[in-house]
Length: 312
Image (cartoon, helix red, strand yellow):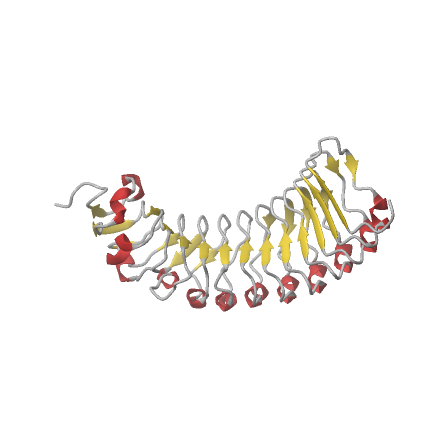
């Protein structure tokens, strides 16, 4: 293996067996290295990869690679994206990744990574996507992530994170941000600042949050299209919230939310709604809500009207 090869992609080949060959390092002009869906590609990432000083995109997705994510990846200073999703990598995320100042995309989802999220990732101001979902990450969310100015996707769902959301998570600047912290062990009330953040979609479901989540709503949040607060212990008066005008997905089920449904809820472009298993009361506002099934409104204190039985 040698020569002026600038791109190498191997995709979906069942007959690729064994480990990544160390001679991969003999391709110094390589800018893009992509191994997709190779179920018999095993072992770790060879150290000779550090010779690929022009590498901008490193993609090993859906293989059977294992072992730690090596520290030496941080020697690849030109990297724009590291995609290692859907393998069997284990151990901690190397904090040395914070030295890669050109990184825009990190996807380590669906592995067996453990330990805390390194605070050093907050130094990568160019970062657009940080996907660490479906691992065994522990400890609390590092507040440094809240100061990533360009972030549009933060996926940390399905881990074992504890503690509360840092106050500076309200500092996100990009109005296209999608934030998914679902299926963790996060606790406490939401920081007030989070209600001020520019967010398109937020999923906080299946945690242990408490208190008032009404800060996540508001008629001035024109970018917000999706809110999922389900399966927590939120408790607030829903009738006092004003809903974002572009809301398409609303799930507040399995909480302790009381009051009535906001008047304008029937005029929203909702494609999905679930307010079941709360303490809501009163008539369901007329409009598009009658199109949804009754189970999306069931198990409340005294909600009535279509699609539920009529009010007395």
